[in-house]
Length: 290
Image (cartoon, rainbow, N blue to C red; front, side, top):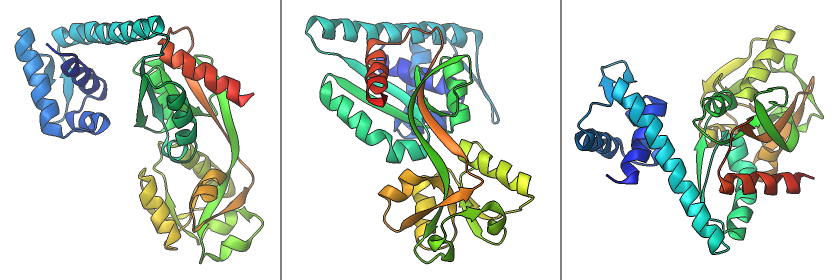
């Protein structure tokens, strides 16, 4: 039995879907199914109840999941302890991050940290912040980038950056030259937006509801490059952060009124012990934030 099969099984068990697990593992779907089937054959047990609409762990699958997670944690701890003996931090940084922060904020920080620690690797999963918070609470991940989660008593959050929500438009949009734009001015503006599981979309929906505005939503997607291209081609405006316009040529940010501030932070479930690699990353981020 190899560790890779256990890693694949754990991902499938958490996501309850072979295709989504394959996406997260950067694999094609058939090898994921084959790995799980081979693991079942090696153990002589059925790990999943499979039907067309659902994928559920069997009783044996639940026991194997708990033991597999423990084995993988022990492997990470072993790699870290060997690294300590050699004076090198070893292991893998695993975290979940929303698309915008992952595209415009995280690369510089993560790149710098990996350069400082050549014995480390990294794996980043994209998800909306509500889902990330739940993944942290369910112990499916140790680290996650969250938004405006300071009041969540179950999480310890290290602040990273704070920015206002912006209307992001293309060069040909007439709103580009305004000093600010009210939500009521967007009633006839074509919009291309994140789906409703993203914090920024939820905040925009709340602003619209308060102003009794029904936006003209032409497209909803969590695929950030698609949003950016549609905005650049003037097919619609979107809601984002100033960092988006600062790093994307052809995108212009106009402050929204009333203003909404988005606070990004790195979060850990309170009371959970995390790997030495993750702890070092959190401490490094905290030092840079001050």
